[in-house]
Image (cartoon, rainbow, N blue to C red; front, side):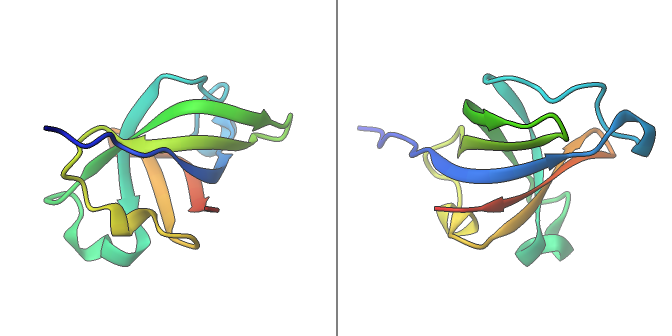
Length: 102
């Protein structure tokens, strides 16, 4: 039996388009590869994707509070412990920086 994949609360800061980021922040249902600060040296050989399952708050400056999760139940959940920092990428382009809140 597969265990459910838990959602974790995180704060995200989306880079503006002028800095190479997105035209606008995505909504719930967005999934992209994440690069974790604690495992930067393993990128991209050991890459995991993060899924934004729910947007809790979106500010006009590109800051967002959201529920995120891994798609796979065997994902390294220790990477989503409070205080963990990560970056979201679309291809080789950095589009957001995040930190796990709880």
